[in-house]
Image (cartoon, rainbow, N blue to C red; front, side, top):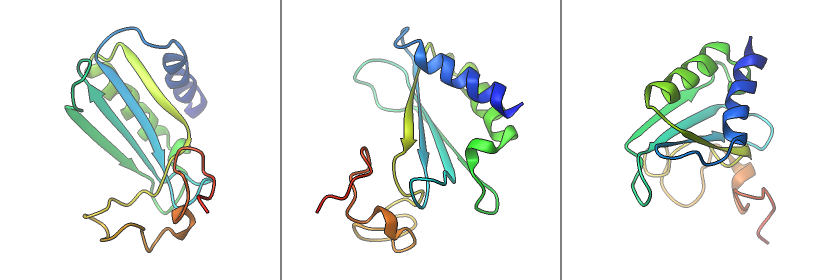
Length: 126
């Protein structure tokens, strides 16, 4: 079941740009191997800000990519939003905690893995 939902999402992303609105899908975790948060944002038009942002968090520090109910909800949200295109990260792109909400400062104290790393490549900056 999870594989089918994952494949449907991946297939939609691989189709490329098919028009607006666009659903953006991103994965976050304490390191680059465990995704504990998945976010989907809906961008209604070119140069527009995200109008609807939803977050899914894993239970008990399990990988959100293996959560069948979350995958089903993500696909339903994207469909309900009328997204014609899906853009998805191919890797975990950062800490699941939000600066200014979960912690103050430049780096999250709960996720030292991401300190000094480029979130898009995962490589150390220094």
